[in-house]
Image (tube, rainbow, N blue to C red):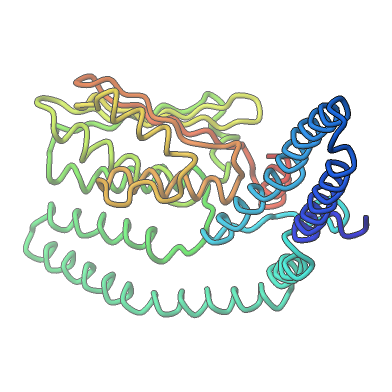
Amino acid sequence: MKNSRYLSWRIRFFAALMLASYLVFVLLAVMVEKDDTARLFLCAAAGILLAAALLVFHYWIHNPWRQIQRLLTRIGEGYFPEEKPNPQGEVMLSPAFGKVIEKTYDLRHSQQYHMMNKRQIQYLALQNQINPHFLYNTLDGIRSEALLEGNATVAEMSEALATFFRYTISKVENLVTIEEELENCETYFRIQQFRFGDRLKLEIVKDEEWDKLSGCLIPKLTLQPILENSIIHGTELKLGEGISRIIIRRSGRLLLIRVSDNGVGMDEETLQKLNSRMNTDPDIGRGEGSGSIALANVSNRIHLIFGEDYHIHVYSIENHGTDVDITLPCVYSENEIEKVKNLS
């Protein structure tokens, strides 16, 4: 039974067994043609064998086939198993399929693959630095001209915009400290205030152990897109004062962040649809509003970096506001992240 882990072998074996059983029953039926009792017993045996065959087919062939189908779907979407396939334990479609999966795993985890990715990232980063430098210089030029003309508002706005783009475009790291992310949120909010004035307010509530927590690592651009979402789709659309609030606290080994607003909120159907697809469908937001896309991007990056145990959940009441809860591990180094991901 060395090849029993291959689905192709199981199908051939099952087909051969069913054919042999059919021939045996035909032969027995001919032999007991005139014996009613024997024929009745033979029919009962055939029914039992058929039921057993259906059970074997379901658990031995159909269920493994569905698992393989899910695996192929995930690979087609760009996800690949983090653990190397076990040659002794996992069911494979065929020997050739098993070799392809194992070879692909080896290539993805080889030093050559990582070096190629690193070079490509460095090349893209070099490309992306060309236009940003021009942008920064232009904004600095606008700021200088504004100061010479005595227009402090334009100068301040240009400086804030340059700071925001410098963080967003030039800082190529995947992970930043939560303190850096909060500073970027404050810069973004300053830019929005030039447009809305005092109608918008931002409140940041930090954990009482903020000195220790400020160095905690989170994915870059986790909070700003959600804050932007709360302003554009929440407080901007309401009459009166709009308040956005970022609350950060620690609970054991978890970093809990809530981005809330007192905006227009959303109806129950929209909320359920958003949450039901948020952490399961990587294509959420396609063909929908930009707010769904922003949440999807943040959610997907959290899953990729930390694992499926960490997530985003949205709470909302129509005409009262929206809360976006982010659950992350409290980590301070990439080594800790690898341990967290392996446990998830």
